[in-house]
Amino acid sequence: MNTVDAVVVGAGFSGLYLSHRLTEEGFSVRGFEAGGDVGGTWYWNRYPGARCDIESVQYSFQFSPELQQEWTWSERYASQPELLAYIEHVADRFDLRRHFTFDTRIDRARFDDVSHRWVVETSGGETIGARFLLLGVGVLSTTLTPDFVDLDRYRGRTFHTGRWPHEPVDFGGKRVGVIGTGSSGIQSIPILAEQAEQLHVFQRTPNYVVPAHNRPLEPDEVAAVKADYDGLRAQAWARPTGFLFPFNPGSIHDVDADERRARLDRQWEIGGLPFLGAFGDVLTDLEANRMVADYWAERVREVVDDPAVADLLIPDGDIFGGKRLCAGTGYYETYNRDNVTLVDVSGAGIERFTPNGLVAGGRKYELDAIVFATGFDALTGSVVAIDLAGPDGTTMADRWSNGTDTLLGLSVSGFPNLFNLQGPGSPGVFVTMVTGIEHQTDWIVDCLAWMRSRDLTRCEATAEAEQRWVAEVANAATRSLRPTVDSWYSGANVAGKHRGFMPYIGGFPAYRQACHDVAANNYRGYVFG
Image (cartoon, rainbow, N blue to C red):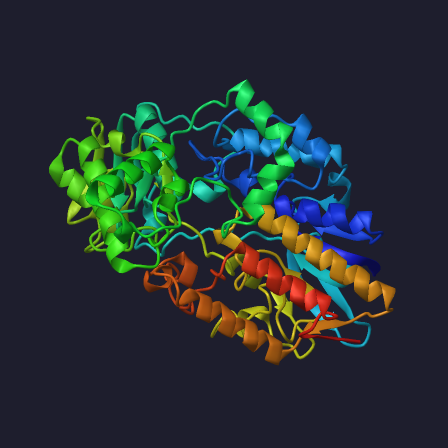
């Protein structure tokens, strides 16, 4: 059995930076990726309209000043092809593909308490011994397709936005159905409507969507960013989201109606996720949230021609921003098209599939192709999909069946020498993803180097420290309205999954301080051997 210092799982942003930092520190690495090349999320998510919802200049690596200067983004919000090209460029520039075996999954991993190594078995039949097992498997990478009645009877083509074909798909002249109006549905529906002869959108729950106002980046904008990239990053790191955008910390209750409207108008023109920055209490005060939701609904009704359709598109009483706010391009305008029909399935849902389509609300819909925009088993799905067990034989799936306890969102008691990036208990999805990945990777690799300098071979979070962090995660959640909403943040979109608000929502600066305090005190909360 070949042995290495670390096995890295996944070749997206996390896996690439992990492999880079580890080899820089002199650790030997083997990486494994289920896809055919680097890219992670952006390798798989190739659906029409796929793009990031964080501004490109911030949704990027910052560990290399040279990389920041040589890469130039073309749009405010980069599309999937440009994002994938960027990741491929990073892999080429730092020669990172050499660490990875592609088209290969980790099927099974067991920790040997005698040798203090993980024994890792791959789908390619290889067994590797690794001192450390580092998971960069992604928080939105295990796709979900509900268990629809008679789905196997349907004879048309089916697609999932999270596993889109690599070859172009032609929907010209087709009757197309889209099931789901989450982020991927919202991004793809306007483009599918332009291609299809007829598009039916099957909506169970309407979403809050703010125009992204995406546009090409002007050369002077790019030059200004590159002239002071360090300053931009420093300001972003000081923000709760690790993302710099215009933010007003004041309360909506402190201004009169005219100023409130003017400020909301200004933030609307900025668009996308930054709309939440109009007032500091949007996600902490119920009345403030309702006023913002009312403003949003008014803007939607200005766009959608049919009042009845607008009614279906506006959530009834949901917390504004309780689920991840979506950034759209022409989304609501799409429902003014003659070839687009919005179908409300909030009651009976999709009743069953037929060979030629599906039945919803007692009506048959003839469809040549169906797009499932039905989301992911978020935060935990890709971890528990691995047959992963600690020294006592407990699997991670069992361990997290009644709650996703972690220390700093990185470690789980009972699973030595295992680190998971951006998982439950970390800021993850509430922080600019690439920024959070870099911070966590640096912390992990520093910990491994600290162990090596002391001839330590075993590291495990204590149950006591883990529970203190779980309490901190829960306490932070009480300060936000987000945990009051059924969402993938709490596992509500997966049948049978334990319900509980999983991310740490206390902000990026507080999280960085917590990580620093652990490291500065000889990794307090961990036991070593």
